[in-house]
Image (spheres, rainbow, N blue to C red):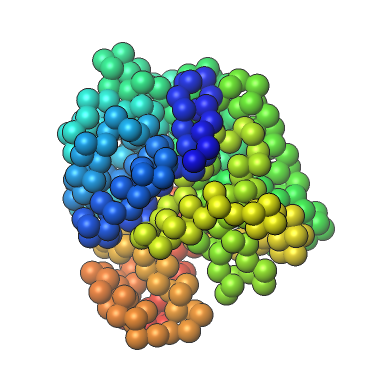
Length: 382
């Protein structure tokens, strides 16, 4: 493992850390194995945002005896509602859930407290200039958080957060697709608007890329620790069903780590096999790390692709939207008995969707989850 400094925090973090969102439904033994292998290989930065008590307990057990070996990032502004993840700015709920996080992880502090999922200016103003920030500052003063961070998918919002001077670390969605959007000819922007990750009614395709570059430059000037999430776009970039020339995980990681402003990349891994694939980066040759041809050969049109992050929750009828779309995406490449079985095991099927549209409003990637529920119901018949 190679190590970098996490901006002005001064913390040493492995170039690759561990994102935990995809192991959420695994058994304790798999959570233990993934966590142990990651730490044994020097992946010392661990990000955790889930509010569900059962998963927090699993990760807490997996980290027993290892807490001093990791830089732990926990999120403020999440809560559990009817067993589901929910983003919140309610101060009482946020504090209760943060203390629950500390109890489950058997620790008295996090190294980085992430102000969770801030993607528009109105929300940013509420987060930075009100009772929510007062809570974060108090928890930091009490020694329960060493540094403050923020997680976002929008460059202008993230830039404004850095400019406030209140933030030490930014967790930001980055990968070859997101960061080469400027390669798409501007003439195509309006025709492709409905398919783009970004809202092109607010900004044109080229300016999105410019905004991202400006944000990265600001992080470098201000010595902000930049944590890259969504390295594989929820696995989308690695799929031959989605891209004519899919990159390898090594090429995606190489693209990100080639940018010196990035302190660490936190890909999510579901099991030991996926973690081993990530770790191959450190054994890869120069040729295997080279990503230049991949960028030239692909359009990188995410087409409103789901990252399976479940930021669209909570669902009023408790559909696990991210997992449902993940199964649907696999099924579109050909339905197998295993895929049918995975769909049957969902506690609430897509057919239960009541078309409220709340999920579509919350999605940070321009997906229409409601339409995907209709598609899943049509495909699986329930």
